[in-house]
Image 1 (cartoon, rainbow, N blue to C red):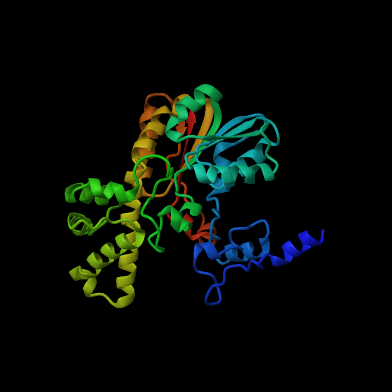
Image 2: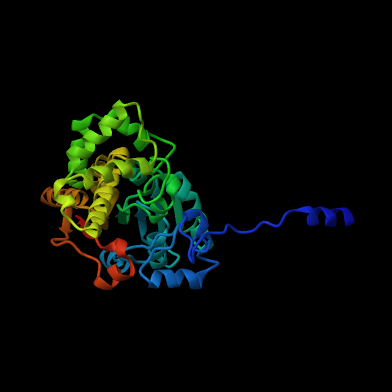
Length: 360
């Protein structure tokens, strides 16, 4: 007994990570934000200030989605993009313990965390089932578990992926240039840049994000790679974009604050364009929309959230074409946008667009 006591005394006391300044800046130091159940008051304070706590995702347009889907107890539904589980939680609540919801996620890291989160919220195997797969496989999922009375898809990147620098999604912090939703498959962004020439990179930046300095950024990337200097980190890519943008004539004429904003916008667009390419997001969305009508039961409803014009155009195009083919009896004629109040509470909602369709 005394020996065990002495062993416990010999163990060094483990202090939490210290950080300089009033608030932590690094993702790893934000221990309170990453424990929403334990630090509820602090989390609520962060959200009320219009910020998203690190490692957390605030679901967008929840009420509008529920209004569109018209869920009733006993229905069978599919959430194609589980993420943090916010939308799935609200969809399950509407089922009132009757029926079933299936939720898909390609991310092997986050699906484990969210499954535990959903179980802790009281959603057992009887009402909710997670499936680790890409939503491009909606047809296969429907063959096994469908057809579905309602389907939703949130095409935005989860905040958990953006906030964690180890995933390589953000240009704001240093980390490996990865950008894959599933880091266990495919090639990373760093590897992808090694495969593309300046013409291909230019097209990628223009088509995926309308980057105005696409050609010059593409040339700078190609020049570095040809000099046998691979771009392996987020900050290496950010430095290239920053140098190019600040060297443009129209940017040089601006004040310092405007120059910073221009760099920020280009970094955001370049990272978005590469992320879309690495994860084949347009190809995945195309395959999903093509199979979607067959995955829905007659009278079934689908709601899709998009976050940039390319996605929205594709959804709009498919819905119109498939309605003409008689696959849908109704589609949203106008896009539905988040309220000003929601955009204030959650700035990441600004670019969101919602469209819906009803199976004939």
